[in-house]
Image (cartoon, rainbow, N blue to C red; front, side, top):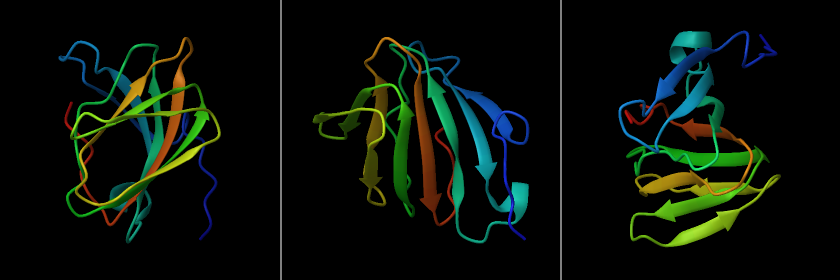
Length: 124
């Protein structure tokens, strides 16, 4: 069955990074095996306030694609290399590659994520 999902009304929202200064963000997970019996994918929307970032993390067995709905930032690789990105751009992250999303802009960063196969969200 096809589903149209409002991430603000029909998601599994969680805060990540509350205990780690600078890493707080709100995640609205809309697709996974528990929410809608997805066999392969996890997806949703993450909102980062200015100056906030994810932790440096990886998805050991999952490839990830991101789409930037609004805002700007940098993706930081495990070796420290920083690549800027802006609204309406995509990024592809191969499985097992350490990465960190950082909001370097002056407005909230809205990042859509999809990865598969299933894997865990970062803990911080």
